[in-house]
Length: 71
Image 1: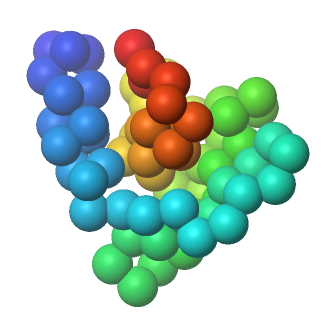
Image 2: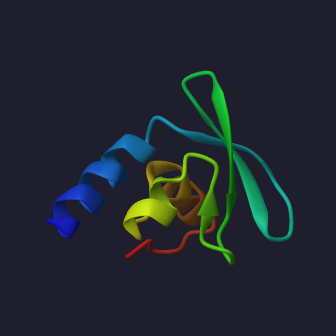
């Protein structure tokens, strides 16, 4: 089940885009909303990553921006 959710989040992350990044954080646009992501703190404003421990689409978008695998 976790793999299914992760794959769905990967697909959804294609709709998101990185607007800005700093040393440890990113701003990710998703349908008119902006979410702040901190990869080193495992934090996203949408809170899905903290609630499920599965990378959310915004986090995956940030990992893809860095050319890293979110798995």
